[in-house]
Length: 452
Image (cartoon, rainbow, N blue to C red; front, side):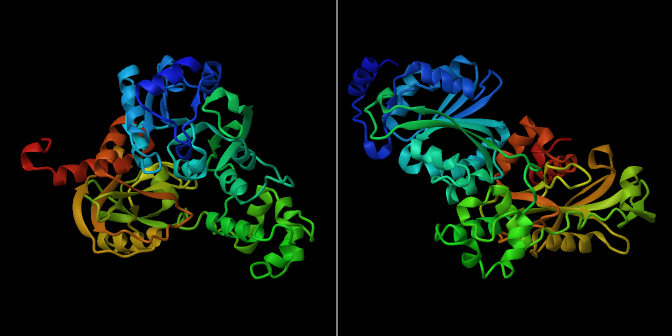
């Protein structure tokens, strides 16, 4: 939309741009098309656009053939877009992007995120949509120039600080280009900038405790000009040895340490738990026949390597809202790494029965106890990994203490979202979980709706 058209349109729909809502409308069509190109949008993509306004970016997005979900806070603008850009590939939500349930995007993932973010909530929006686990695969965003500089800053620069490290620990950040204020109506008081954020792969950084890392960074930057050895003396008793180990000067200040050095420092304080914990290849499993009768015992590697029939439990934990807790399996798992799975699951060990295993696995994987009841029994098959499975149900909302060696993330999802996600993206899940979900769904369906 050209500059002259923007003014006329705003008058027609009786919208007076509100500065506090960041209502500055882009009128440079070349910039809008460039932004779409930088995100690599194609017809196969699903895109979320935050703050579409009058559709400057929405139009070139739709021109690629992509499906677009646009979230607009101003109801008048949302109504205008529904009329002007009526398209079966465009869904417009009238609402606050900060209140949007990001979890509903998982069935459509991987999702690309675009938007000209309101300056006053840009940081909150970034952290909400890109906080792991996230369905976002890449984000190209326009922000206030100063914020973009802080997000993409490098060590020893004036912009390098807490926000830099918190975001860069989750995403790779690229400063793409500066955008002058005169491409907007009305003109903002400051320039803007485009950045591209790409969530990091599970194995991209050295394993570490994210909470400890953020705690250290916040303390380290609490007095920017003070030496870290003095600021962190409560956490790091032998600072000279720590500095030597992470390759930093003894007199280093917070702004001198790279992200990798901050991670190394967190691991100096609290070495990561051995990642093979709970996955001992010599662990003994009960081996069974086609009727689930015990016929012997064999180590994990032999059971899995030879596809021997064995026993397992899966546990579904629901919160008060009726949402199901799913875990994302760690990349260290010997089967189905990085896939979503039941709240907790595990094998029946030698000398153990199903019920005892369920109690143990819940405690070991999630750090909680709950009243569990049996829901369904699944026969061993190729789809269950040759496991006979008892499925249990329990209730709980946490707090959970996930076993870091086995679980990368935990998240509650509505049953409707789980069903849709399985239907649209079954490869995101461990096969055994899909079978358990079908069995659970059948068990709670009215008799006349159950599949024969």
